[in-house]
Amino acid sequence: MTVMKIGDITQIKSGYAFQSKRFNGEGKGMPLIRIRDVGKNNPITYYEGDYSEEYVVKKGDFLISMDGEFKIAQWKGQTALLNQRVCKIAANEHFIDSKYMYYFLPRELQKIEDTTSFVTVKHLSVKQIKDIEMSLPPIEEQKKIALILSKAQTLIEKRKEAIAKLDELVQSVFSSMFGDPIKNEKGWEQVSLNNIGETIGGLQVTSKRSIHPIEVPYLRVANVFRDFLNLSEIKFMQVTQREFDRTKLVAGDILIVEGHGNQNEIGRSAVWDDSIQGCVHQNHLIKFRANRKWVNPVFVSAFLNSPSGRRQLLKYSNTTSGLNTISTTTVKKLIVYLPPLELQNKFEFIIGRIKEEKKQMEQSLSELQINLQSLLQHAFKGELDINKKLTV
Image 1 (spheres, rainbow, N blue to C red):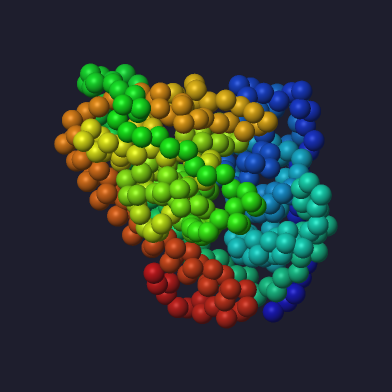
Image 2: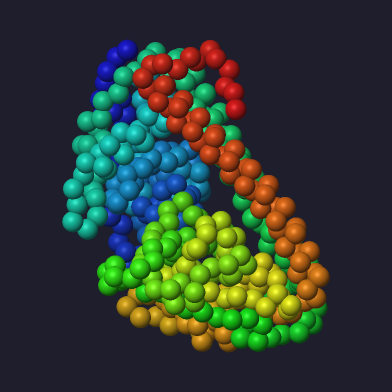
């Protein structure tokens, strides 16, 4: 195989420093691709002014973000302008297939990112990209390899789409069974959380805890999302017996995010499933323990994550030093409506079935992603059998 530098087999165009005074968010002029837009395809910033055609990005072009996280993505959005600190890279098809380049570069960019020192943010230069070396099999072999990798990637994207549709189904089921949470079209009785359960704050994490006798796992903001838990990383703290008794989680407890830098994430909630025994929660999570005679916690959490719940949480939130917060007092004041308990329980059953299907799809997605990484590793070591049929 021939070894060549990226700079010799591609054309790289750096973005232009367009005048920020001509930026707008009203859709006037041309969409502007900034670093945050690479891989997302939906710019929210527009540029109204003169520009050169050399900075125009069209659907299908390949872009590289050059600050922070170094990544390559194929542009799938509308025609737009290339802003500074984003570059466009085009393959010389005589030497390298564009898709082959697309699948090769991520690992090389990651290597550069991992070894780049920084004070505030990492910077990537065009020279660093040009200096990347790669082994090139014959162009037809490149195309076959890229096709195999593209098929594997397509399977991943389809699985992600299916998972997203299940998330949408949860919202649809809620609206179908209970109506619009804001309008309360079905005229359900409205009550405050204070009247249907107990609200409890969490424990502050400090170095002083090392003297306490009991070590326990605890949940934090990074574990709680909208109607699901991420328990991949669990931390531990030392507590007293009294603290443990007060903050120990039991199945059905609702965990509500108390503080977050993003205002839209304030108050997101999920129901504890008791998958970790003897777990407590830190003070940036508020616990609500519902009275099961009146409400089903799965319904309450879904309501808090609905537009009506989020609207209330935003209304009561405070901002200090860039952190948006709510309090236990705020949670107690939140108003939810009260459908028949039988209907709430039916909702929990349906959601449980959907979540089980989602869990299976996520497992399948994980296997597909592992398969793609294996294919990538073999492809760029020259070990991929291009005549072997892709299996999943």
